[in-house]
Length: 116
Image: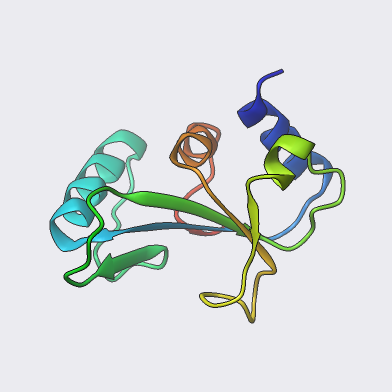
């Protein structure tokens, strides 16, 4: 079982609310939205939950994140990549993982931007 599969299994064995977010500068987030809508047959916009448009910052790609609260039985691989969530959504979610590959994998398995 690869690491993405292990995270999906973790979610299935530990049912909980999660939140998926995409963050990027305006031109990158617009491209992401177009691609996401086309690939997953959705209709999100720049104002949809889960979209964070950045201003003029030194960030060139789209960063995908998953927020969650229960880390029981989370594999060591993901525990090493997990952050305690101290700023954005900190009142709602204790932990986050920034990993584009993982989030794209979750999209392929039915998860969506925003609350799940």
